[in-house]
Length: 180
Image 1: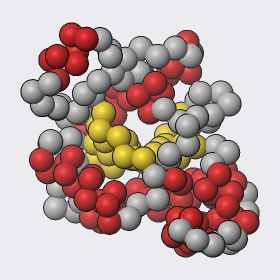
Image 2: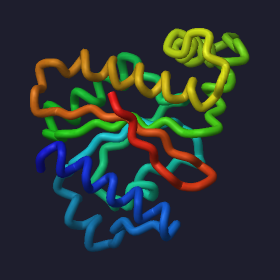
Image 3: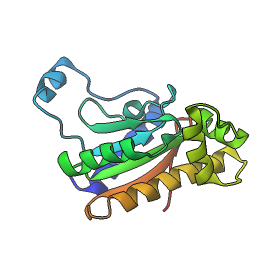
Image 4: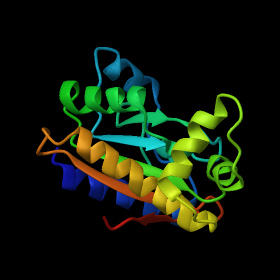
């Protein structure tokens, strides 16, 4: 599958989810059996660990369709980059989407200047991405855009790979695609 086709499928699934609010992915026993021998996902989604953000549901995907990487604040570090590279180079996934979301606790913590403990690793990375931005939605956008740029730099050698960004509104279910 081409990257543009993968993106169109995610956009279509997001529009259907927003309209209907129901999960349309195939998680049947037949699908589990079909995938037991291996996976061929057509998109990677890097998103927040927030329990209100379920990329399979948001994009209408079932088992084996998207390779999901979750970390608080959708922060990109060495482990996330390695997972993205694995998907791109070993599973031949043509698309990576960074999915930020409204009301993100990690972004709010970064804005508030919380840097204590291990959470500080995440909030400092977000703070670096957002600078002095105080508006939570704009900060979420800046954080997602920063992650997209970091992934693009890391995957420069993978010409056919598309990296995109989006923001999910947890109240409405709407996905806004970022223009980068």
